[in-house]
Length: 574
Image (cartoon, rainbow, N blue to C red; front, side, top):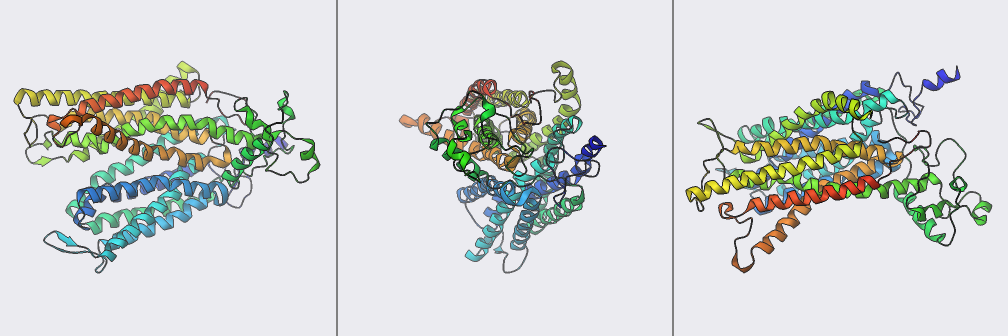
């Protein structure tokens, strides 16, 4: 009877909304996920529907130049990927993921509503004469208030939704654990469905119907996202917030240095840990001791002075679980850093791929021309195609070959994506070599029009990046959730998102360095304004080389990495 009662509840510390242990048959699992996936799909549709064409809105309605509009968009976009650190901290420390998502969605929808009003309400909408607009300073300011409200809202939603969805699967239940791995695939799939609709339908509406409708539809879609999320409330499982993770990290560091002269016992069972089944960190399971970073173990050595104090001073004595929490973060950081080069490659879709496409023939039939930036839709299509293939075909086959319940370990999956990304740069470089040969053969160096080469030759490089995303980006989602300490999952998910921002910054740095080095002595350089006289292929070879080097370093990091081991589970490769 006791075993039956225990099987009634989840064993990973999740609760219902009232804080009671979560009943397995009534909560979580795939029954709760449709509401979360629908929420993510609608939120991403709203985000991309508003952001994809934002630079043109700033140029047309705010009367900004190319450089100013571009910088304003990239600054805002960077903020959208930095703000998740704030939202994740609040979720892990105080609010929990559910209430963080719920609260920040309201901020998000208020920003979208205000942005819609700036494009449709008289007084907030700039006055225009023959497509030349003259916005007042106040009107411009309101647009930026709306945009940064959206950035703040994104900060609370983006780092929490994937983790909250994964919370619906009990890690101690093997069948649910397998489903959780599948959840991350379909989570990323839902993101790209939203992006596909946004980059095609909504961009067309903005260009051909009007900005009021173009921003209004994302606002309505976001309202649907909010409704979808709240409809599933009774089904959700929740991880309790564990207090400030930054404070706990600081306590381990301070305690370690205070005891720098203390010897760590050979018998690690003598290190300090509370006797209760639950960890001292609320919402977190106990972690078993690992051998790496032994200096930090000093924080868990109980001296005579520590034993005489009641209660224990956490700035002098920490539990093994608290020490291992910091070790987990330190172990993850090199894996996190290896994602920056991948994000740099990914960022080329919105920069160098577009510049390359600007020189090619955009015609699709006699009358229709496809904008070079719209080719990113093939990246989205690639993800939509590859996710079901990976989940339904590759994983079952890999399970038979490797014997691993996920098909590949998380580190293997990410490594495969890093390799695939190299081929996207090679494809782009080869296309550029062919393009330059056509220019040389026909003496088109100063030709200002489209070359006699279809823009659709770019499709392979976009499609390859999409395949790489399915392995690396989804692998990162799963890895950072699984390997993060229970009470720091949102924060480390947010940290993984910062690789996108850093990848963009690294791309900017590389372009700056390449331009500086290759334009010495009056040379045009690799990336001149007239690409017909440049060598963009050299830049793609550079990125391919850096990606290969990054993969070699990644292999060393992956071999060194030790997977997290909770006290209630046996060690196994993840």
